[in-house]
Structure formats: structure tokens, C-alpha cells
Image 1 (cartoon, rainbow, N blue to C red):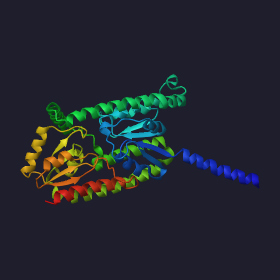
Image 2 (cartoon, one colour; image 1 turned 60 degrees about the horizontal axis):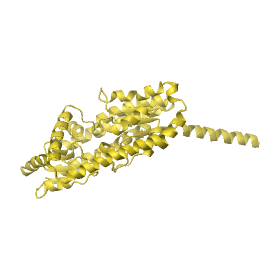
Image 3 (tube, rainbow, N blue to C red; image 1 turned 90 degrees about the vertical axis):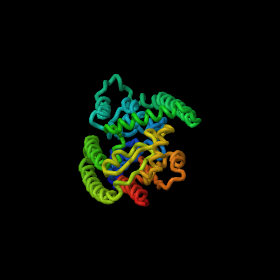
Image 4 (cartoon, helix red, strand yellow; image 1 turned 135 degrees about the vertical axis):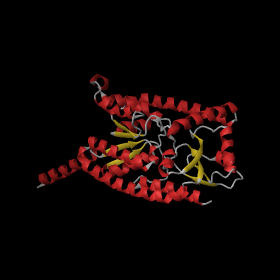
Length: 357
């Protein structure tokens, strides 16, 4: 009797252990991708976040703990090297799958990293576990320290910008104009701000997860169908909600909103900066001030990751509304339905500020 009981106990124990070992493990670079993936993964596993709320992918420095997360995750999802440049080398050297949101030749080739790694020679990857352990303790720390040095240099550079050097301001204006031109040609990588682009990414994610975890393929498919229905319903409602304010002009702090603006037909007049870590030039700010004085815009939007001192200075004394929109969904909880709540919240901010005047 005791033997039978022991057998039953061990059977249950090892079945539970196998289930835990087979749990889906996904690492998302930024919060919006985590929200999308959470809806697709569902109860099959977990989606961990690499960049914590408040961190910007534009100027992020990898830490040894980040490298450990990359090693431990079976699938890493990211936007692409155009946004998370700090991830490109680590993903190339990582033995695992990666899925980029940006496709069609812009970053699609980076999705081949996993295939290359899986078919790499035995000599290159022998003693794989020992290699990663040693690399985590030494190589990755050195890599992170190198990034930290670059980050320090950037901070030093920005300190000089704040001192008011006109040459930096002129350079920023030229860079802003050039980057704006690129965005006009479809190189804006903030694709998650268009619900339909996010839906397309979710479908690709569903397919990739089904390849990696075939036993849960049916669950991924059902989760995607539910996600699709929710997003299409939400999208139709938001188009109706936003239609009355489509002609009302506004400025945004960071040039991240092109896909949202285009999808819903809104009237964005411009932005303060392309790169939120770079101070906009004086001439550019003067042009914005002139448009605000001419009452061409009814609202200026800031972002929670950055102190909007420049926005306050430019709008001082003017009758213009101020709102806050977050391209990184920092305050949205990462649970089922999170992505839809996020996009609805963004739309609500637009309606609130643009309807007030």
C-alpha cells in the first residue's frame, strides 16, 4: 500500500515538474510588447519585461541581470534594432529564438538569429552551459560596463547641451528635420501604437509560439482569436470617438505617435524632439511657439518619462491645453486585456485635451 502511495506521489510530482518545466517563457523588450504577448500566451506561461517602466529604449544600457534574462528566456520579442539598438549584439550571440515587430527588410533579417544559432556548429557551442555561466560572470559584466561608460558619455554630452551651446542646438534642429523626413517614409518604428499593426504582430507571435510550444498551439490560437475580436471592436469604437476631434491641431513631445495619428486621422502639427534624450534646437522651439500663438494648436502633449520643462517654457502665457500620453504604457498592468486598456487610455487623453477648447 505504501509502495502504491509512493508511486502515485512521485507520478504527480514529476507530472507537475514537467508541466512547470514546459511553461512558456517569453521576454519582451518594452511594456507594450509585454501587453500584447500576455494576451497571446495567456495561462500557458509568463511574459517577463526587460526594460522596467520609466526606462527609455532610446538610451538604455544593458546590465548583467538583463543578460541573464536573455539567456533564460526561450523567446525574446522586440521592436527591432531601429529602436532597441542595445539588444542587437546580444540577440545575435544568444542561442535562442527572437521575434522582431519591424519586418519587410527593415529588421526582419534579425529574426533569423535563432535559426542560425540552432544550426551553429558543435565546436562553437560546446560546453554551452559553462560558456554562458562564465560569460555572464565576466564577459557580460564587461559588456554592461562598456554600455555604462557610453551612457555616462551621453549624460556628459547632454549636460553640455543644457549649458546652452548654440552649435548643439543647431545640430539638433538639423537632426530633427532629417529624422522627421525618415518618418514620413515609413521608418517610424513605434508600430504598437497602431492597433492593427499590433494585431498583425500578435498573429506572428501566435505562430512562433506554436512552433516553439506545439502542445499549447490550440490555446495560443484561441487566445489570438479572442484578442483579435477585442482589438477590432475597440478600434471601431475609437474611430467613432476620435472623429469629432480630427481637425484639432496639437503638438507632441516625442516623435512617436505617427502610426496612431495616421490610423485615426488626427491633426498632429509637429513634435518637440525626435529623440527624447536630446534637447530640441532654439529655432525649432520658436517655430512651435509661433504656431501656438497663432492658435493653430489647442493642446500640447508631454510624456511621463521626461520632465516637460521645455514644454512649460514654450507654452508659458498661452491659452493652450496640456495633456500627457505615454508611448511605453508605463502605468498599465500586464494582465489579460492590458493592451486594449492601454490604447483606450491613450485615446481618452486625446479626446479630453482636444475637446476642452
